[in-house]
Image (cartoon, rainbow, N blue to C red; front, side, top):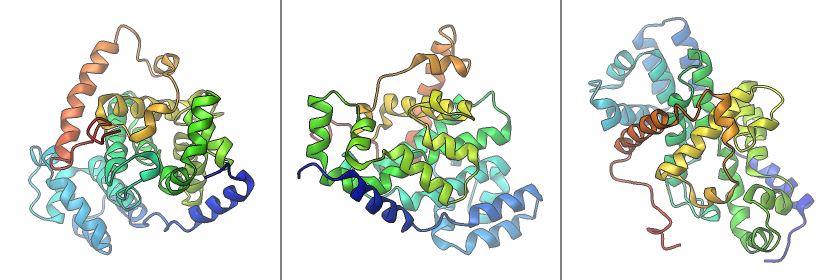
Length: 297
């Protein structure tokens, strides 16, 4: 495939992004009920409206990650046992799952791998944002969960124009984000930012998605973007990378300092993340992340 015309492709990609189904409204209804401290029965009725989301909430609450702490024989049990913050996270993840579970061959990601990376990044973000207030920590979690939503749309185009991108990266020394911009007139960060705005997420979440590879360029909410950056990097380093993710850019250790992760605390931080990795694997007991060696690449 020869080099594309970015302006034409950009318009086509925008239209493809606009065809994405709206983010499920059940999350906002659940969040509203949680703020009102509504009865579990009322929250259950809202979640049950979407059977796919209800099934995902129940499945996640029964996973080894949660089952060792809670007994959840039913959706009602999960709502009662999980608590406000944990339930909000699980419902958010259940709502997001439908956009990530397909194969993204353009990014060399097998079926479910992008979803594993998204969940791993979100869970790791809880450790990264431990010093944030509760509301802000949930914001980081949401942005981390959705940080690669742009890839869900861009993957097909990356697959088609991979040869052109490889030339840009190998011969001209461009990083993957730069190759995306040169090829399509945008990168997956920018596309993700557009999608998040269309779904009417708060500005903090939009920034966290739109600047998760370059948080220092964000004009506001740099701490949110930095937390997603660190969580994304950690997820990849711990084996929950997503195909070509390692080709994006080098680490910027200055960003870790903005979150209070200093050279003195890095060992403790890495130990905590190593423990988190074991917990994440319990969410996917029969579907471990595939390494590039496993994939034969």
